[in-house]
Image 1 (cartoon, rainbow, N blue to C red):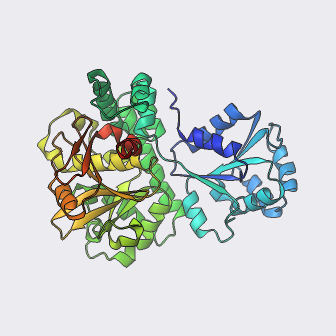
Image 2 (cartoon, rainbow, N blue to C red):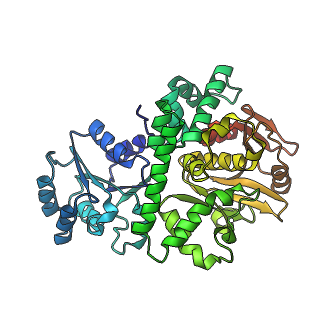
Image 3 (spheres, helix red, strand yellow):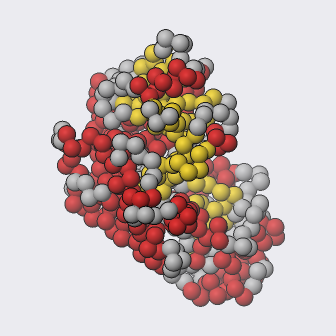
Length: 445
């Protein structure tokens, strides 16, 4: 089964843009970048010329010999059977981080041959950009790509249910059949996550073992990336941080603690390891803010943060948590169930919002899971893995800052209630996190 990716809409806008520049798609490995680029080219261009710098060393040598786009285009025609024409052919440079000269050449394509449509991607592009001195700043466009969202997963599994939710006209309780199928899809999604191979295995009803096999393969490839691409001195630290993430998130207070990685570990020893994982798009680093001011970034406590994985399915597999746990009421699963819920919410918020969320703590007595900046509004968001949506921490936050809107994501039905001080509290079912911006707009309007 194929999964329609919402990034295609962004790619169409890029194609039709008057100020179009060579495009770089940023995102982690195995989230479907190659598939999306090829599918986009096949649907919207007469021809697709695909080049992979990881599997073709000769091609990389050609880019080292010349920087002239005209000459490069002549050479590219020798490496493909596709006809390369300005405006009619999509030129794809895959794994472009393997050839810094190709990355740098995008500048000259933009300046000298702007009519040629070029799209590039790479599994470690964020790392390459950070360390590439000749990066063509201001000469390329960027699009971030994420794992398959629950929105996309639901659309593939139950398109009619997706269509109903996506065209909502008012905030109201979902019909029972819509709610039931949505939660059924959500439980499947928490097992498989958003890595396309695992998600497709779930949609095809291939069974838990197939899903887990795909996830283990991805985790193995991550370790191989650590050893192959990270600085030798940082490899053990990156691997240690990566392995510690289930332990970090299993605590009631999910703040990242260095001694969980290694007894006696200090921040300065592991900062580069965290930076590498973040640039590789494998983790999200969510900082604590000491007050909800504008902009949120100005109030970051850089010494206090949480780390979540890019994908909830990989988190579950990294923790070696059997998928069957979601069909049980095991009392030992309470804390980590909450961590999985938070990770799933964050994973589905990221494609929908413009900036990284934060979290808020008050003197160690209250903690709100996520704080969002929505234009000029600051929105507190509490995540509950069960139907009980009562939150003392959110009550403390509301009493202190009196936000116009607050959000509780939980197992409860969709509704809006008004708190005693006038704050509107949106109760949103966990599966609908990806639609949050639209619900916030509906409340504001």
